[in-house]
Amino acid sequence: MRKFNFCAGPAALPEPVLRQAQQELLDWRGLGCSVMEISHRSPEFMEVAERAERDLRDLLKIPDNYKVLFLQGGATGQFSAVPWNLFGAGSKKADFIHSGHWAAKAIKEARRYGQVNVVASSEDRNFSYAPSADSWRQSPDAAYLHYTPNETISGVEFDYVPEVDCPLVADMSSTILSHPLPVEKFGVIYAGAQKNIGPSGIAVALVREDLLDRSMENIPRSLSWKVAADADSMDNTPPTFAWYLSGLVFQWLKAQGGVEAMAKQAEQKSALLYRYLDSSDFFSSPVEKGSRSRMNVPFVLADDSLDKQFLAEAKEVGLLNLKGHRSVGGMRASLYNAVPLEAVEALVKFMADFEARRA
Ligand SMILES: *Cc1c(COP(=O)(O)O)cnc(C)c1O
Image (cartoon, rainbow, N blue to C red; front, side):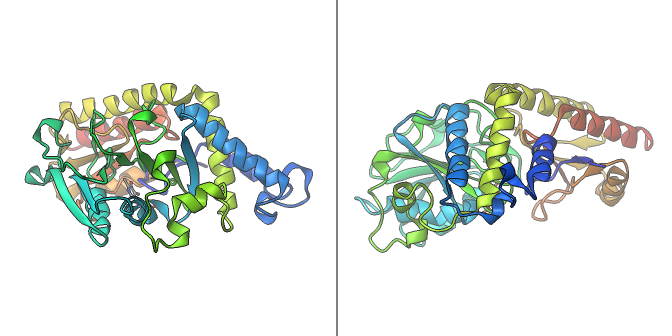
């Protein structure tokens, strides 16, 4: 029996998608083999690849002057790809907003190739909020500004899109497809798939076309957006099964009402949990109001000696993967698109019951 899964990533996938994949696994489209076992250049797979791109374009209303790339190496691969692809024309300087764990990793990687200027940071209050735009000191000659709209580990989400003069680059691994997106405000958007797109093994990058010729000279071929764009993301063998499954998720999203419906649901699910956390003396949210993530909700027990028991009892009633990240402790419930409202209702009910039994 499937249980409610709050894993931060790889995360829950929509059940209908898994069922379809299961049903098609051995004999896909009457070919007598699975989608994993045919050439990525076959007309059948090309159709899967093209449909996935088309559906993603529809979902996010991606303008025509953006390439949609399906890549390997995860979001971490893009931490390297961003400087490699953007430091080749003009300055090797980039502005970064430091909002937590993932921003730190992106910064560390960019520093290997150029100069990083941290324009804003929330380190002063343990990364419990998204820095506001009025505190920034932007560089006049930055090749790009990078930020992390949703910090998956600390559960901090920006409630605004930065306005900058240089190309804006965003790591949307844990928030893409959870709301409508003004894509035209960004130079580059990238995301590892395993939170809100599909299984691990594939990453998506949306790159504005005029940024494709800014790469450093010795860029590794596998990191080049230009090479990927020219080859329709098939310069070498792509992760075909992950691409196919991501495509099924896009179809499922469209059938659910698209990103507008997902935004409404994310609001509803996260509000339900935050409302309970704020009303309880037993549990609390460490994230400041106004910056609280709709996708990842960390929370702590007032008495952390009960953490283990909380997790064990939660698991017993079918609420999985609520343990917080090892770097911050406590609990975390990830509420991605594939996690239904009933899961959050069940979680809140369990928490209230756990609390009541100790009152
Ligand atoms: C999970 C995550 C990553 C790392 O993704 P990989 O695909 O494992 O490299 C990077 N950034 C954010 C915001 C994430 O949530």
